[in-house]
Length: 315
Image (cartoon, rainbow, N blue to C red):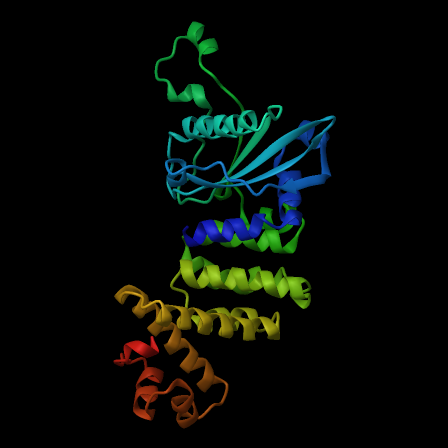
């Protein structure tokens, strides 16, 4: 599972996030009938090996009047338009109904919501659009259904932050997902995005979710640790500390798992950032060297921006 998928699942496994998201993207006529108090996350995934190339899923069930419906939150993997999406969705929904039938359950209507955060704007259309030059008299013989497609590039940052969604944590998640492929912009806006959660970060669950945001940024971008720390520190002192400890955890994981050369390069950047943060906070070069298990000359070179050969066990 990729970093984007993990972050999507961490975000939408939180029921409050799912409720806020659905309230703002479902049509009004559907919203009015959904009993949000009954919303329940299912443990099942209906994505098989073939579908896993296209998307990840989080499925909620709830009452809609007197019947139970399923709401499938789907995350489009590709960062570019895939015009097979409607066909893949058709296969996905049939898998849900097949699973219900095998368990002798009544079939549930499925509302599919696809979240896309790719680099190009995209409007995939419905299933009949996959058939070229389809005569009008044959359209009734093509299975079709509505689904909701959420292209984050269609929203401005201001829309997400101020006008559409309610929860600070969901706003931050969507803003970071929207801008994850624009690292330079994300780097300059991080402080503003973290500012949204100032009050939220005072709570324990707020700090827990902040850790998943920070981890996603480290793993999905080349933004340096010091940049993330400097962005979060004015908003939350504990958050700044968390940004440091999360970077260290990832560095340790990289060392323990024996990552390949590309990973070692990323770990070197993290180590370099940590050294610079320690020096910025007034720590002596000698003390930094002792803490990082390096010699003082290496620390001086790192502070000057020079490349240093670091033993693999330290990366």
